[in-house]
Image (cartoon, rainbow, N blue to C red; front, side):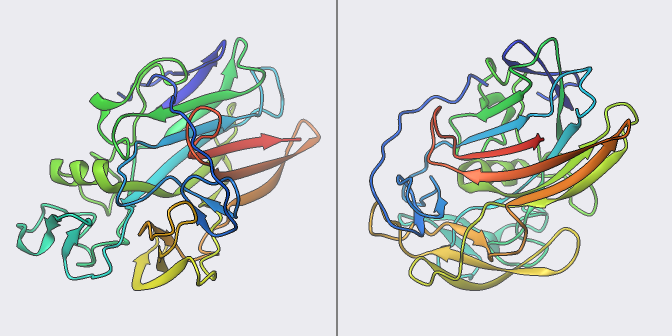
Amino acid sequence: MSLTACGSDAMEDVNQPNNPSTASNTNSGGNGGMTTFSHAGEYQSFWDITQHWEMFYHYRNHTGDWGNPAMLNFRVTPYVGLAYYDIDNDGEYKDPFNTVVDFNIQPPGTYPNIFDPTKNEIGNFVPARPFTLTGAGIPSYWGTVRLEVFSADHCHLIGANVFAGGTNPNGVFFDIAAPPAPYQPSTPQEQSLLSKFGKVFFYRWEAVNPATMAVVRSGYIMPECDTNMATYWKDTTVTANLPVGGVANLYYNILSNDTGNPSYEVVLEHGTYPSEDTFSYTVGGQTYNYTVSLQTFLGGTGNPVSELKLTYN
């Protein structure tokens, strides 16, 4: 599935069954660490287990329109997992009010991607169907293709719930129904749980030559979050298996600046993947320098929860 732009809208040219993100911002001060409503601090996030807010995901391809020799396609694969830790990896996943699901009593195959592989409540990720921002348009929005994914769900896995229109006219969503091997087809129970308690932890990105469709550079990227800050983050002692081998420690939030309470959000250990990557690519004798970056913000139209973008100079 790929996206092109016409005017200010991102468009799809392959089917993958959103109104632009709209929400008010509520800002307060804070100093460092994880914040839910603060612009201060290194890591800013909207996720809190006591507040099931809907989230905003924004994507940009700033490499220009057709005719620009620097233009690259930007293919993105989100990896989704359960966003919170209940402090007890006993197979009974709880929020502050009740048991959400007891994995221990579910028939095998009910949660084939997010529990069965490890029997851990957290740290099991499933890739969504990739989508591509092509960079092409007549013209695009000032040389930028924009995609904004939003629904009333916590994580946008249910196509019927995603708002279509504006910068998501065809309702792109995080489609985990048929992930690639070795992942299993996602069940309705898995999709429902992740739509209520999931988030995108990291992405695989690919920069693609639009003329040859060759991948010129690829990598993984996640938000910058310093889990060494013990005031805010604690080791869950649960590890996550990464898609290209290896494992990463998982941390959970024990203090949010805005509330003074834990949010229980789970993040990958600092340094698992970068939050920014750079590369060079030569076209017609001219070398261009590109940057792929991911940043978290507060939320709403002015400050999306996260923005993943490809730029060049």
